Length: 156
Image (cartoon, rainbow, N blue to C red; front, side, top):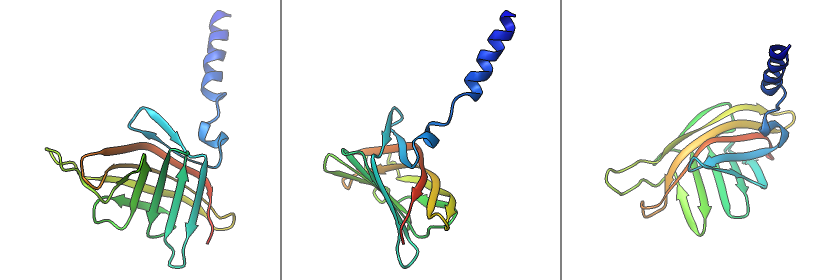
């Protein structure tokens, strides 16, 4: 009986929890510097006339802007000279995937944004991202991992 109860507790702990992202729909969030969950409390997404997608979110202290050349399912590489860009502004410092580091050894901005789903009927978009970026001097660094935008409404 003791093992049966223990088995039930283990089963409920695996299957009884809902994914936090789905309960906070819609969301734009990520893990900043590997130890702080940054989550926007205000967000928007826009597709312009040429089809480019801009996603913006803020938590009141920092503002993230993701710019992609298209609002279509696929992966978009980030880095200096790439058409896709992520910027993050915090405390009057703008970090961008268009800037590289200048310290030795030199670190390059990089990352990826993946659009997993675009629902043209409901105008919702879903995807993931991660990136490494620098300020314009190349001396200050910003990193995000495990980034998610989920059930984000977009306008055209």
